[in-house]
Image (cartoon, rainbow, N blue to C red; front, side, top):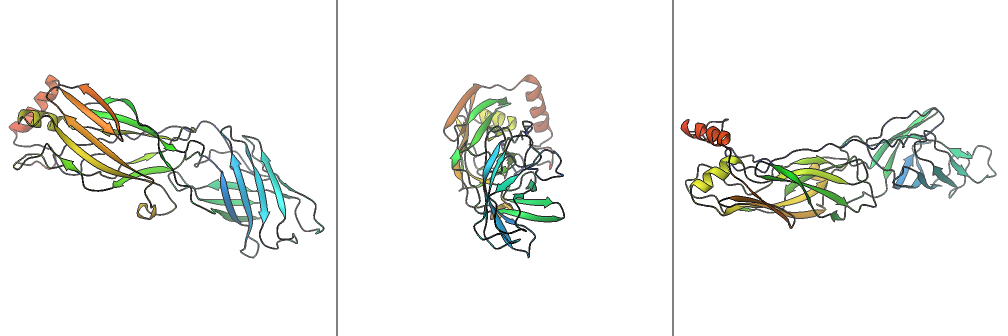
Length: 324
């Protein structure tokens, strides 16, 4: 997360984008064509507004495995096309298939279809992946999940490296049995934090809260997002060491939300609350995310020191706006 306040030590954001792992699905029907989906899975229960008298007729109970195969059942909840309520069709679609055939037992109704076909596009990039647009020969409609899928938590953060004094953390959304690929996660303020480096008269502002960083969840089945850069900026390292404040640091409280089919302020509740922190010591910096901690020896290079001293000579601690 990047500090919003000028001259404040920053939690850096370095968004990570991972490509879809080549699986093609969600596209069914006689004239469907292959394309890459935005959302990674059809797993769940979907209500299908089938275009017949604007009724929510079919319920699709689907599971998609890690290879992209889709199986499940379609159940009719209303009388439609002469089919009795409770009619069922089975779904068994191999990965990369562009045609879904939901096969039903024969009914004594000439108009009742023996098969149902749909071309389905689930959500948009970064959406909640809980709605879908559908089409078939001569018709169009939409699907809605019967229940929003929320993560149960997060896995143990893994350090991917360092950028300056910031530790770069990757984390997986849980459970891994559900593919959250295609969604986004965003941080929000859980509660006020603390900054033990700051002092009255400091040239740097306090930094005690997250700044609303967002990340894409990987579409490769790992549910990983990141990296989340947690650490002080170089000006903070230099300044607080110069003023003999080290060891000191900031503790930030982060609530994590996952995208829904609406504004972020409607994507509640948070699925996990995390504690983030960094420590500036005389010769090291430490980065902490949700209990995982890493330390590195960190000294400012001559070029960085020269740049910081140049800023000081100008009477500024940040380039824009310049603050005396």
